[in-house]
Image 1: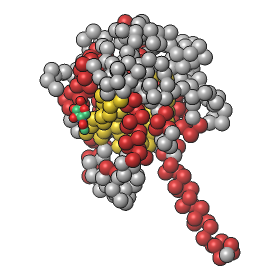
Image 2 (image 1 turned 120 degrees about the vertical axis):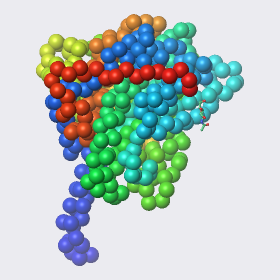
Image 3 (image 1 turned 120 degrees about the horizontal axis):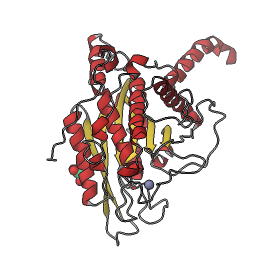
Image 4 (image 1 turned 30 degrees about the vertical axis):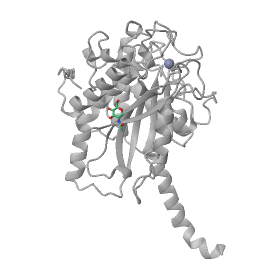
Length: 398
Ligand SMILES: *[C@@H]1O[C@H](CO)[C@@H](O)[C@H](O)[C@H]1NC(C)=O
Ligand SMILES: [Zn+2]
């Protein structure tokens, strides 16, 4: 038997190696250029904490099941419908009792926005998935949660707005070239703004992650049409990038998972390049443009990163079901940022240079993942041209 199969071994091996390469797109995808990095739009006044069109509507109490939560949800829906009309918007709803709901069911609403290549069947698209929670803590009363996670939601909104036109151009270009073979890898992108991350009373398996648990369970059980490239909506998440506790000065982002350490390194490399190109307003920890201030594990390989006890967060229900996770959370040797779960975690305590820089970094990461080099504004930008992005006009109706 063995000898009869020998002739097959070499071609089988090469197929196997090709399949492995497909599984690790990060090792192959092309870096975006300095010109593109130098032309990324900054959020500017849209991140003003008092009246900025993107951030200020999120800086309010938004406890699950309260009018504040609905107002923020409407803000997300309004932003996508107005600024990003090519995106598909969905809500994923569930209810649960909580330790403070006196036996009543509290509604939890996850917001999902996605964009796929226009010719692709939904079940064939693997999606880069950017995630933050939008609920705020029940206690202390009046808690805002600016780093936790109003600012991360705003960073994602700015990043998606900043790549949207380039996505359109890239896909038009692919169509013009006839590169729409359904058997090719189809790359899409999606955003989750999850509800009910916070515990109402004391963190436990049942009092926390209400929205994430419901979404992961539902998407794991739904099945895509037969012959789809991905069996379930859950398995079409190519990378789950979770942003949490971002917006304080000098963050420390550890690499938690060997299988996504390559993506961590991509993010770190972009931070390094953006700093070197003087595109960051925040100074790195050491004030040295060559340091990788935010990503201390950038120079390690995947076998050298520490084995931390994992941090409980919205990725857990997805990770349990096999989704690949990049957890971008400010958790250094001294723990979470000083304002964490305190009344001080409000707009005034954000380090706005850092918040803006994060939004550029995630723009660059998404642009690189979606292979948008040549389609981002850089190529057309003339030196000295105003790089401000147009302000997004908020509508008042739903
Ligand atoms: C989920 O809840 C939202 C907000 O309350 C509502 O607009 C939407 O129709 C609900 N979706 C479903 C599928 O029930
Ligand atoms: Zn929190």
